[in-house]
Image 1 (spheres, rainbow, N blue to C red):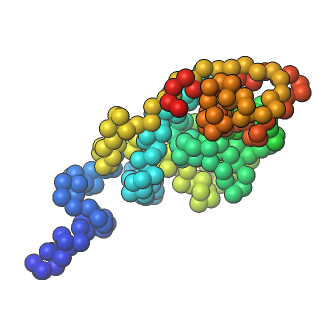
Image 2 (cartoon, helix red, strand yellow):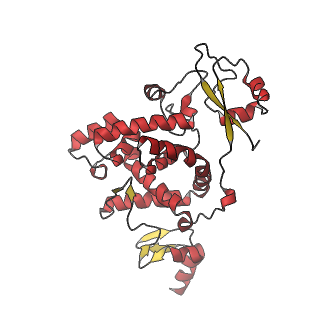
Image 3 (cartoon, rainbow, N blue to C red):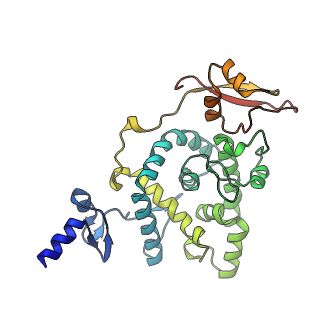
Length: 297
């Protein structure tokens, strides 16, 4: 028995309420134990003020799964925490402007990790819009300009979608689920199963995990030290001051344009990823705002 206990300690394997947790030892192990329950698990949680029913066994276990996964994706979650310091100050006031609960910034987190991601299906940007949906919500998408890569404009488009979804389904939780499953797809499940609560619906694997991933990242990002993420303030990615230049004509060479602004092409594209070509064709004289960093280059 002593040999077995010694072996378990050496391997860093701890049995918590019937669940093996690997790779945990010392102080971290102690923090996970609290009256027979893992301390990482929240007593209560909510999305946009709508309480998750953690007394329901499968609800509790589904949240547990996402907490464990994301707390142990250490490099990925660390990068998200760093990026949020730059992205959230852009996203938060836009959510507030449209009356969208602040918790929806965590939806952007799980969609893209707060980078301009590209999915295999063709969704792009921080908010992962498909081309047609982007156009429906007022974004320009063509060979020269793709506003899915424009954080402010794509956030506004996401807000418009979410307001429509909330009006249709009645709750913010269902609005969030429909962002993944689609309004028609979620509505079909509601009609088939005769229930309207997200936590009562049997959904596809991805949509059934979706809100729980949001809840998990919200919990971890609000309490990073609790989950072993100790990041110094200076390690966070700080917002970079910029000025905006308005243009209403074609720019034939963005590299040359960048030089006239005291920067290079690379820096121009980093701050304006919605510019998708080496030039900006603008025969309609549309007004665009191009961001030019005033420091950090």
